[in-house]
Image (cartoon, rainbow, N blue to C red; front, top):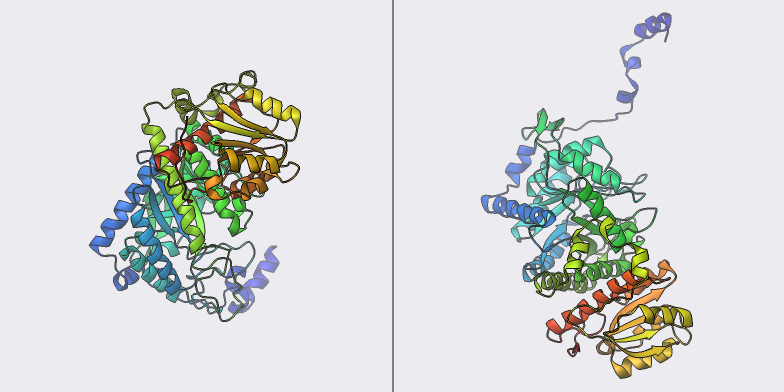
Amino acid sequence: MNFANFLKDQAAPAEARVSAPEAQVRAAKQLPAPADLFGRYPLDDQGARFVAAARREIAGIFAGRDDRLVVVVGPCSIHDPAAALEYAGRLAGFASAHADDLRVVMRVYFEKPRTVVGWKGLVNDPRLDGSFDINEGLQRARSLLVDINRLGLAAGTEFLDSILGQFYADLVSWGVIGARTVESQTHRELASGLPMPVGFKNRTDGDFLVAVDAVRAARAAHRFPMLARDGSHTVRVSGGNNETHIVLRGGTSGPNFSSPDVRAAAAILRKHGLAPHLMVDCSHANSGKDPSRQPAVASALAAQIRAGERAIAGIMLESNLVGGAQSLAKRPLVYGQSITDGCLAWEDTVPVLEGLALAVRVRRQLRDAPCAAPEAAMDRQGDAGARPAASAAISEPARAPLGARLRVLVADDEPLALARLLALLPKDIDIVGKYGTGTDAMEAMRRDRPDVAFLDMQMPGCDGLQAVAGLEPSERPAVVFVTAHPKYAVDAFDVRAVDYVLKPFDGQRIATALERAAEFVRSRRAEGGRMAGVRPEAAGPSIEVH
């Protein structure tokens, strides 16, 4: 603007000189001071002690001091506090019964980041009608958190807006910074001053390095503007939050819940001097945004945990009273069903959680077993670069897991692949059958009851998946699928396979799969015969390992 235009602008009426940002504001409404809501919906001394203890326990798990698994489970978002509280009541009972193995946290999300536009959450629009009464939303959010904590159930939430969370952060035991805000300096500073463990999700494209950077940034001291309890604006000086971790949630590049993904992330954490423990989200890109695939992802993670993987310290699931999702435009709304992302139904959630609890117990038995192989322990705890070279593994057959002589069935319609697999299996196991069709393999599994079955995914007659599905739970062995196509991985875990191996085979990978299968068989025996086949929750006769 030249000087003449400047003088012309100053001569204009004051209302015409309103700056562009102010011109876009149609109205303003004052927020209450956080202290006002604290007084109306107080956290009493007992509640404060409960939240503090939950935070310590969660932090201990991600630091590696506690061998339990943090499970953050609940609705994608809260839109009906009554339904949310009913869900909380069910989850509280489960959490209490499995407290020795799982540290359950209810997912209680009040804010929803949107790719473009849409309903932004209970706090933003509590009446679901576009009235946007944020003051009412804050009251309903805080009231619900008070009620959930009174049930003895820890609550977790995403901190999206840097101000709104200050109205209820004292009631939250675990927080998360989402995939869209993980690179935001504002959110890293916010996390540095939050009084609870905080997870950082990988970016929407799947890059987890930015989450590692966020963890490092949040552990440093920061100075940033914030809302005080009395409603005044202050500059907060944080000392840094050392109780931060990453969350793998997949991305546009694909899922990242596999064992190589978990180990790669743990290695990067270790490289930066951080505890090599992380959380994996079974939803979002890891499930292809299909809630029905969450159990398969959880099963794959449970298989890693059963095999002794210590890097997996937490798992997240989206679950609700009613499965699926509904449109906000639909009226009346289905009680207990999500209006944002689709969720797993409660009755389908319980078996998944029970399978995770079992996996934790098996991992604990592995840790405490006197015969645990030191090489395996070193491999699980060490950097990925310290593992034996693939070329060395290829040249040697696998070794049978210590203390076990397994009965193994092998099925593959490719003669060369079948021969290669047999050559890589150890000598101290019993091969009970070699088959070239899925139909023959299914009949043999039903007749001979092998401990372990290596099955090709694609075979004449019926494929490997159909062969397993054709068996009763009590007839199913520990299944390892073999395939040349990684796209079948999730399908494999849909039927609770203990592992899948990609062709061409190598000795190290076969050894890992066999070890997982052996631990699965041993865990069934340790459970006293309460689990048979490849479904962790199924009951069946005990299996004798020769």
